[in-house]
Image (spheres, rainbow, N blue to C red):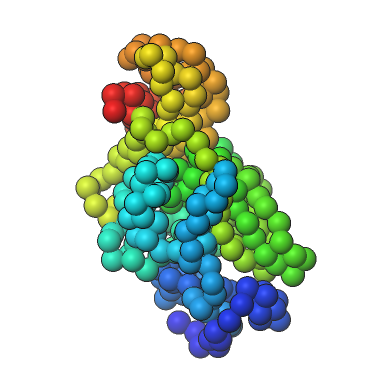
Length: 326
């Protein structure tokens, strides 16, 4: 690991100012992903701006919404009694992520910014357009069992690894950021990017912007929710496929629905068409299978990950069945 300067910011404004002075400077909080990347020389910042002293750790239940500070720990959010009551889908997704030790260190903002776990991205001896633009994609034609089936490009077929982000995409969250040009809000479904021709760009943050919080609008998804994570082992493993489901059900009829998938794209994959299909339908296995098949439109395998084309609709059907039975 190369030598770097470490400074501690005491306000969001000073953090943004500090990082703006050097092109390779980066923010650091929990460091659960960034430190790994630095150890492997995937990233090599000259300066780290420690933001752990900022007042961005609060969970607040405001009129019409819930605000979660970017520095709130994953474990803090997952175990908060009001989060469990008001937004159980988020609590379930967070509890499915990483290990308890990592959840105690990882922050909400850092979780959103974590990089892909594609082995070609982490191996600096291999080609990777995300790490070195225009160097090639080793996963295309290589080992791609964990890779995307939606929204990929000839430049990149990597997936975003977060569980938390899948739930936040389903819950219509908003990201609040602050940067050199001031403050702004970003719809969560617009925050992460598909790879296109610029897979090195994971999200729509502008230069040197800092995530300050996320906001979740109040909703009625407090009962019929489920987060299904299919993985190679029962703990500390990234999803082969995950499904976030939130339903409103009245007299066995679905009145509202939210669905998103993880482990299948460069960003959390929202299933808008399936959501619309489910509204007004009677709860049944047939309806769930139809919604699941609709969700798989446009899916494409790359060899080792072809099994996801079958696993995907089965996982959606199972998640919908479990959520509806609560």
